Image 1 (tube, rainbow, N blue to C red):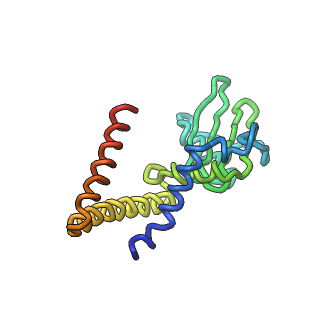
Image 2 (cartoon, helix red, strand yellow; image 1 turned 90 degrees about the vertical axis):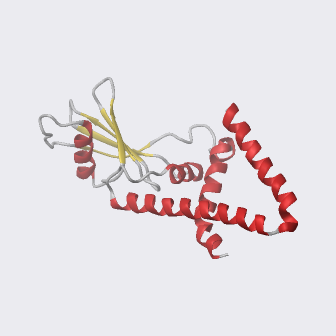
Image 3 (tube, helix red, strand yellow; image 1 turned 45 degrees about the horizontal axis):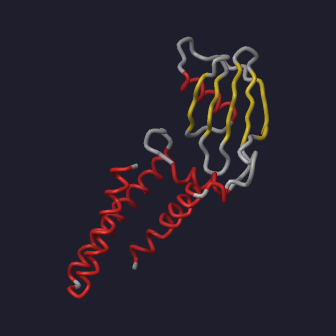
Length: 185
């Protein structure tokens, strides 16, 4: 019981986020729901090191904007640098145009399905940010506890002689369906 109570928030979040990903049409909010809205723009007059890579540039721009944190970065064909700031509540896209030094910050309007997907896909160890690492550690703990939960369920099933036949059908059915998906998808 205590194990289930501990796992409740994660099971709820992963269950709802998976439902949102599997049934996007129900959760998406109609056409144009994913469009970005301008939050603000500013001129960045900072200087980058001569041999600065995209990560260095993106960290410096995020710091100037006051929104440091986990992010992705790429360079478009026209030379603009696009930074995607991964934030659960307010993800942002920053577009830096080196030619004129402008930074455009855009955000997406809040949507339940997008929030749940960001929660579901959250990764932490590689970002270098403490809160992301703490999140990753807590998810790892949940994974360990879920494996224990499954193994203890198998052990309890085996110990209950009256339930062995029906339990065997359930175990074989689940393993068979899993194998079918694994081999055919």
